[in-house]
Image (tube, rainbow, N blue to C red; front, side, top):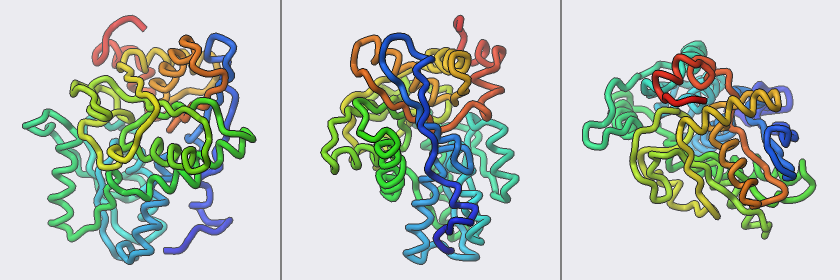
Length: 319
């Protein structure tokens, strides 16, 4: 596999827009949204996949005819399925019932093989643990490579040299505060590395889910995919955000819908969580300028986050 040229399909990854979304937030703070949905596959995971695949290719692990297996809640699966097409290798994606049907259809359209997990891990009740267990089994059965997004530090490179560098260049300076949803913690870890290596004063807020065990969180049920984790990822042990804000599913859904109607940008589930956290931070007077990283948009969530019947059945409460 080769590095993408200016005319390569994969050259459409990165350089996403930074736009003013202050209309979605009360108060005098300026809020910028980094819209990762403008990546080729519609999410920040395109950057992660590109970095992991480039690293594995340089080490001789991925090549035409190779087989790879990975666990994904959705977006990384799409990104790796596309990378497999371009690179000429076979991709197997382990998913669970929380993954949106539109995302599953896209992964299949790109020729990847889906392996759905039907039950959570019996010991922990966690879906991610069950997915990772199946990945380990498939890796052995298929003789496959596992890039392991939960421990692969190439993810930090993607968001250090990509996402955060772009934000600083687009603003013309480092922001006062950065809000990023966390799951594997690759995005926030890469952004933190860039900030600290350059000596910026930016405060970094990790936006996590209620029920996530990241950063000493208490395990609980998590309904929405895209943010939070049921295991302490290896990457997260190397990440030290300035603050963690935990957002319940109902608050994320309400904030996502509110942002859509106030700005015209329809965020995904994690974007709703980020929007809620930013509102709280502004209300506290935490910063006059905030950059919110929106990992994807709401197109894959129209049947869940933006569907009244689904919300009433799965989350409940008035929105």
